[in-house]
Image (cartoon, rainbow, N blue to C red):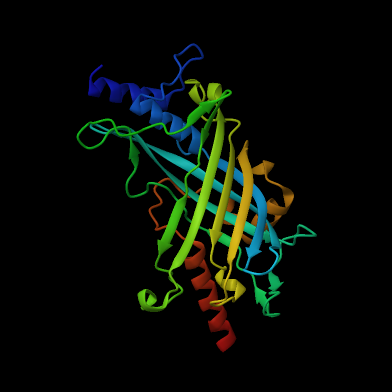
Length: 302
């Protein structure tokens, strides 16, 4: 099959689901690897919203003292895929998304807006995670082939007992913190963290060429980082540890009530994914925190 024929075949597979009797997707084929990635992340139905949800806990770790359970957490990400075609690069995609994560009281499991720092005894205002957007591959979409038509997309999961598993690595983050000044290379302050993500999908579900998305995908996310800026820990020693588990939901309505209520009352835009042509730069907890602190300072100055 030549390249043009493969591109046209990819377009037909995206525009209309394959029949139940169709051959399974081949993880070793670059265009099927892209289809699998789209199924995991979003849906082969272009623009269809996909919701992932997770919950877990946040801990402190400081030398010489017992680790503390600071918060429970619940979060969600709503996303959609923009499916692309290129004469040389074949099937491709990018995804647009936004996500929130809320800090909950460890005893009541209610969303909390303030917190008494146990090390400073100061009551501080909590800045919930509300990143809009946190999209993927916006400037450089993922394609099956490179610009020279050579295979590019690879399937990186491994199979065990009927599941494809991915993870085991870490995102090692070390970059300029927007909350710090222009002299971080001399005095420190660079954002330094490590994030861990894993996932599992049923093999039959993932390779089913007639299915638009993966039904039963479970995930886990963890992070070890410096203190969150709203905690006002300054340069005190120690790290924050986050550990969560979650899954893909059938719809936004399947979110726990505590998450849905908070979103509807304070973050209504997070009910749906951004538009497919959204090209805004991604937000992070640090850029959102910077904006919140600047707003607080303006309010306090009035």
